[in-house]
Length: 286
Image (tube, rainbow, N blue to C red; front, side, top):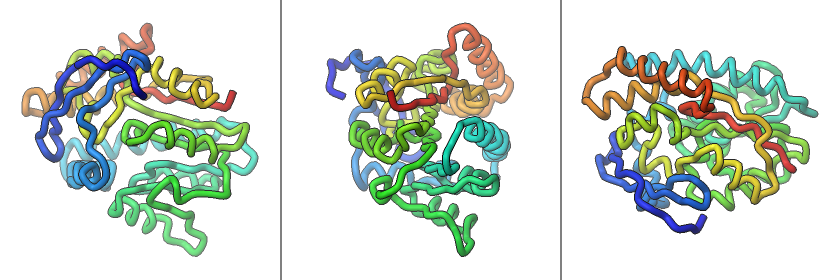
C-alpha cells in the first residue's frame, strides 16, 4: 500500500482516547489511511470501551436500542443475501463475528458456520449463544483456520480494522472455494454524510478504522489478488445511524431530527451517485 500520500483531514477518537489522528489520501488506491497507525497491544487498547457497541449486546441508551433494532433488520437482509448464492455445502466463515448474532441466524437457517472474533469478551458472548454439543468453532484469529475452504466468507465492517491488508486478503482468498463468494461491507468516505460531517463523521472511527475505502479502492486492491467486484449493494440504514453519532460528535447532542434528515439526504443523493454511507461488495475469483 505504498504510494504518495497527502493530508486529507484530522479526526478525533471520540470513543476511547480523545487523541487526534490524521487521515492521509493515498492517490494510487483512492483511499484514506489513518496516521499514525497503532499496532499490537496499543491497537487493542482502543477497543476497550463499553461504548464500542459491536462487542456488546447493550440496550441501555436510546442509541443502543436503535443500533440493536437496525441490527435485527440487517440480520434478515444478510441472511437473504447468503441464501441467494449458489453453494455446495452452505458453509460460511464470518470474520469479525462480534457477539455472534449473524452466526446464530445462519446456523438456525441451515448453514454450517465458523467465526473469527479477536475481542475476548465478544467472542465469549458468541460462544455462549451457540453453546451446544455441536457448537460451531469460533477462533480469535483468521490464521487459526486452516485445511478447510468456505462457500461464502463475510466481513461485515471488518476490513477497515485489518493492520496488514495484503496478507489478510491473501489468507481470505486461500480459505475461499474456487467458485466461492467473498462479501465485504465497509464505510464509504465518498458518501454525502461523510462529506457533510467531515472530521466528525463517525464512520472514520479513528484509530480503530485504519483504512477508509472508496468503490475504486476496493476494485483496485482486490484486482491485485485476481478477484473481481461482481455486485455492489447499499446499506441504507447506515447513513441514519452514522449521522446520529456524527451529530453527537459535532454538537455534543443527539439531534435525531437533523441526523435523520442528513441520513435521508445521503440516501437520496446516492440513488444517482451510488455513493451510499456503507457499501457491500460481492467478490469472486477471476
